[in-house]
Amino acid sequence: MELLSLPVRWPIICAPMAGGPSTPALCAAVSNAGGLGFLAAGYKSAQSVVDEVTAVRTLTGAPFGVNVFVPGQPAVDDGAVNDYLATLKDEADRFGVPLAARWDDDAWSDKLEALGGLGVPMVSFTFGCPSAAVVKRLHRAGSVVVVSVTTPEEAVLARSAGADALGAQGIEAGGHQATFSDDVPLKSGLRLSQLLPALKRQVDLPVIAAGGLMGGADVARVIASGAAAAQLGTAFLRTPESGANDIYKSALADPAYDGTTITRAFSGRRARGLVNRFIQAHPDAPASTYPEVNNATRALRAEAARRGDPQSINLWAGEGYTFAADQPAAQIVARIGAEYEAAASARSRRG
Image (tube, rainbow, N blue to C red):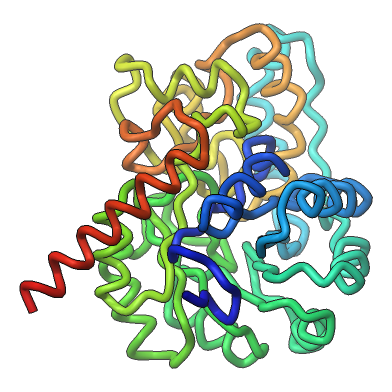
């Protein structure tokens, strides 16, 4: 079959997961198994992105994608950032690290320059909509362009910029919410079952569905609802190819963690993760303070991980995290693909 003009066996995409989980090995394993693997360019230099794309191409000849963060504006209220960081002083002192807030654009221009010459089959964007000029430039490089959206209004902007498809992220999804602006109530947002029909009514573009999807029946359900493909991230976090650290992988299988929630505590932007001590202790991070808060807590999180403390790091996970399996990525793709075909066939027989 073709997924947005790219040849794949199944409409299964491995979500880009910035901060470590997405690796060339994971990307290539998913693509080789018949899905579409993804690299996450977030928090990396342009040269690192080039190196990872090169590494993927040594591992697979199948199509794959790269995801890029769209930079926002600096925080409007520096005082709010500093006030929040003051509440983290005891945490920082305990780990012996500084809290230095700073804004950056995640090497936006350098990454676009690199991607313009790499001809990556698919490029997706998160946290905002690239300009029409950026989209045209990537089209000239041979890339299909996808923009992640969480509302019909964002979808209209993506269509206006010339996007080929939308990544529809429901509130169930793990990790950062893809909203263009984070200046909204902490736990607001549409579930995927609400978002998909709302997008289809508003914009005539192919839609990739994301949010809490873990198995083939989930894939079949969203395809039956009009999606062109399903994007799964948490399902691949425990694979040996994932770059998630061992304490993160262990936490996903630990019954002591009994749910997920939306928080701004670690980054200043809404994200879904396993409920741990840090989230419960710091519920008041202000809105629209990413990446300042994210950069400020980076050293704290890194030191907590080095010490093996899962209660002080971000354990991003979607609502279906209990189904994440410790299996090779290829096995997971094959299982989900078989489940999808069986569920789709059953739906067809039912008419």
